[in-house]
Image (cartoon, rainbow, N blue to C red):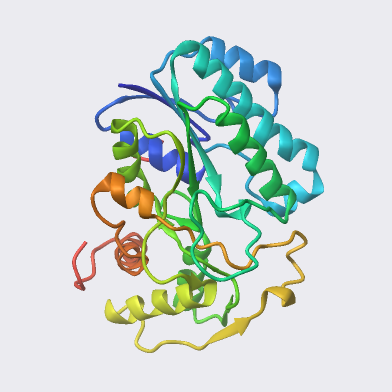
Length: 302
């Protein structure tokens, strides 16, 4: 199968391209080749493109950048996906467009299923919701909502906390913002199944388990670092409140944990728990850091 992947210098795009190139022909579309901000350049890129499936994780993901330039956010996160979806529909190409848990308002605790009302509180969330709706104007396409993505392709919150713990720096994390993370390697495996089953509509894709906060995620990370012998004792982690984060100029929804029942039905099993994914990732991070594997519980970039 010939699969095109946008945003291949980003975390999700790089992971998808690397994963699918093992058994498929992958067309990489980084921003230098496929700039979603440039309508003319995007049209020229699509006109020359030959593929059966297009995976579109590209977009502006910085909430502050979207808040500073909502017009650009709407162009990249909504108008460009609409143009990709229209082009794909005319060519018989299947589109999997990646979106976010930030389309939800997050006022109440609990899991959000695909049919729940979206009510974004930021320019980022509004632009992503507009992109979802545009893509789904063609019912054969699919929107994949993801949250708190981590993986070896690009540093994320987990990597920052890992390095801070190793260096003995003070640790702090927000404790009143709740969601579920997803490891890129797990996401790539699920995407294989979604492509194979020709999944349409909206689907939530994240690891399972009890929803957690950034603080809880940090504690789980430290527990695994202790188990692997990377740390000899767990440092304290200061609990922060979302309202205290003055560096966050854009609003963040508090409760956005995604319900994965639809994904589970397609996979035939629950996505593995996020704690197991974190455990695997700690072993990988330690291997990369040390240049060798640690003996703890078992485990080409483009």
